[in-house]
Length: 335
Length: 258
Image 1 (cartoon, rainbow over the protein chains, first blue to last red):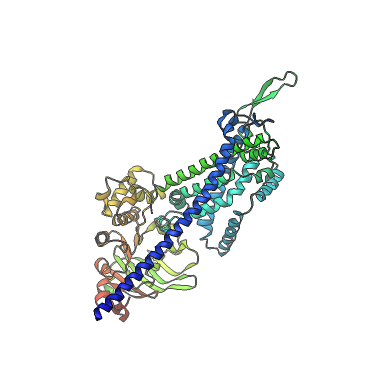
Image 2: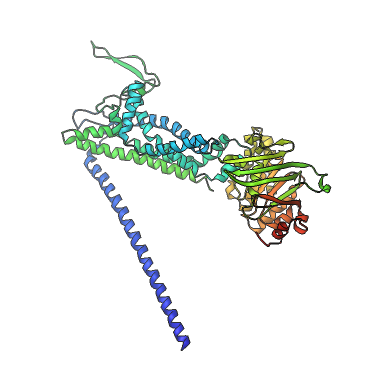
């Protein structure tokens, strides 16, 4: 009798355990479905949007002329040549301006200032850190005002590619600094100590070991922030991007033409310098889109939709490059 | 702590004099005096948190990397106080092997050559010769000579640790510091590292932190026992383990605490 009772309680315990497992498993499954549902919802809305753009702009997207004509008064003739070329020029300036400054600032803050023996420097670092993180969240139009004041008014750079590129450069700078610091932080301290311990200086350690080990993450951060900048409209409107522009920034050393007033013939008056393109007027993809969307004629909506698809593809290309670089560099690093 | 008369024949390589070390206001090493003899193996033992690793890392100024640390007293390397030298000079003269193998994400060859390259050695012949010698000294040459271009991470844990020893040896250090070099390794790899350390006796001065007392007995000539940041006793290894003067040392080596 005694034995049977014991068996019974063991069975009850068994059943209870199984029940508890199946209850917890149920919640597990439920949660994974809920999470999947939200993922699909988000993706679906996004895909729908791109699909809608694609459908609206399909005629324009299919015609080669759209990519190689300047904006025009009629929707049929208008194209995005000056916009995509302008976007590429502006982003080039942004990259050249923000990467050296942002990466250098990140290296200084993470590798030098944080471990400084001076209490004041460390306090200053904390203060700067808070501000940089904050700056990363400031609305982009505020950067437009900053660019307007510094580059256009104070430095007198005008409505130029340079002004636009540097304004976007300031916009992405905080993000680059923060991602650089995160990338450096993820390098194990055992690696740094190993290098320092055989007599390497700090800079040798950074250049030979820390940077190669973190370059993949740094580049990923840079490209993702630049791909955000390529779609920025507000700050460029503030610094005076043009909306209707029928010329391209002059390529270095290309012939400079002038028109004879009497005959109407063009003749060469020399060549452009290597940096003249920096001071040229410009427009960019999102501004071209914004302009077309605002036109009263519905025909321009088709152009806007097509330009939107091109812009999405440009961003996609940059992000793919980021993923590729990350995989390429990670493959060679193992801790 | 002064050694007995019979050891005076051996040269003193480094001398710790009335030395203290602080993390902020916390005195982690308390007024330690210690002599490290030339070309001998000196081990430091003691329970966790006794300050043995902290003291070891003072020898190559590793604490300088982190803010809020302070040294007091002297550590003489021959006759120079290494606390007043440039830390880079100190680390060029005193090598270190860490608890966990930490090879660089480079090839086996480049791991060893790196120490030479940062010193400005450019001659390929010299680099090749020194890399080979270091790998031979670290008893790993036969295992890696055909795969010098492989990534160092492809080696096993024990091989990685011997690679790190070779890396430290390549630059001819005057003293080699070992911070529990076998605590992350299996028994076979541990035995090979111990054999290697014994083989280096007479060539380089070695200071090794270990929490494995048998290891201290097997490989070291002298042993320092530390407790709560103080150096309790320092003597020949056989004296420390068989005939220690201090009650605490006897209790620790017989396993009564720790």
